[in-house]
Length: 195
Image (cartoon, rainbow, N blue to C red; front, side):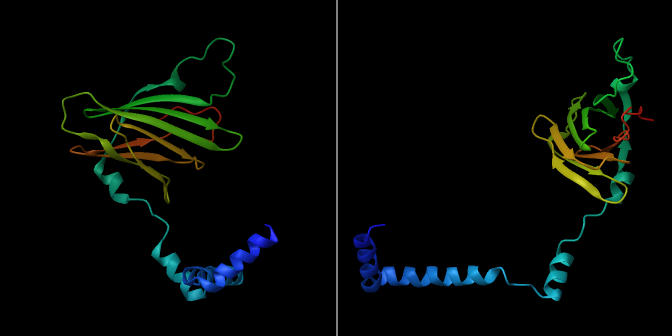
């Protein structure tokens, strides 16, 4: 910035009330920000925040209210193409049925980074009044909620997660009994068949 322009700004800041007010405000903001790095909240404040946002526990009533789905199709049970029988599968297609609902699932795994992706679509095979769009989809491990989402208007959903042992998927649809799906053990490179 040229010295003339800097001088004009200084004169304006000294004579203009709006400029003075703005300068005081930004000076206070600067002071607060420079002190921020040294601030440590008190132990009771930290404890209070932790108590306000506890870890989400599994919803045990889901297990009691859900009908566990029956497997209609599992790509793991299909013969592999000749010559690749020994290769580890990283994708798996599963179709399950429960009452008037069918759920198509695709499990994809990255065994190196232990990352998993579960995409699915909920379909009704009857003229049910079920509201599939907006259905709540909850992925549970034995001791916590891993992830939650809602199905879109077409019944589609997607979950990305890094936890892969003893997982159960629950789908709550208005007007229908909940659907429970026991997922395969994901960290097994052979992708063992569902029981």
